[in-house]
Length: 148
Image (cartoon, rainbow, N blue to C red; front, side):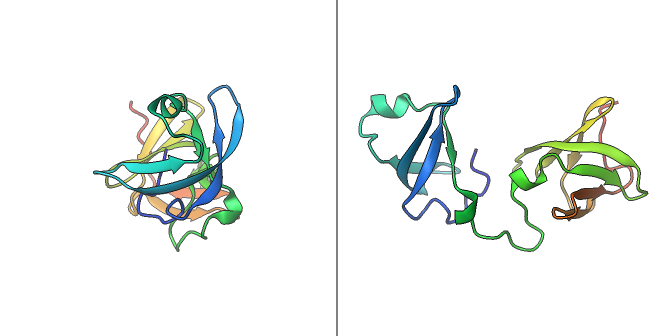
C-alpha cells in the first residue's frame, strides 16, 4: 500500500524489491507517475504485457529505507510506528500499536490491548506525542475506542 501518494520517492526511476505473497523476491527497475484520482501508475522493467502485469497482482513493492527521505516534523513512516508501546497521558500502559489504516483525512491506529484490538483516530487531539527513538506513543486519556 502506498501511504504517501504526494511523495516523490517512486517518481524517480530506481531499483526496488518486489515480494510475492509466497515470499519470492525480485529486484526490478521501476518508474511511477500519478494516475487518475488516488492511483499511481508504475512501469516495471521487464513487464511489457498485460499477462506479465497480472502475474504480479498481490506482490508488495519495497523501497530500501536508505533511499527514503527523512520524514518531516510530526510525520512518521508507518513501519517505525508498528510495535511501539502505547500509553495514555496519565502514564497507563494501553497496549502496542499494531497497524495503521490510512484514511482520507486521518489514519486509524489499531492498538493491540490485553482485551483485543482498540482503535484511535490519529488526530492531534488524540495523539499527544510520538517518540520513535524512545519507543513510546502517548494518547489523550479516553482517546482509545475499545468498541465497547
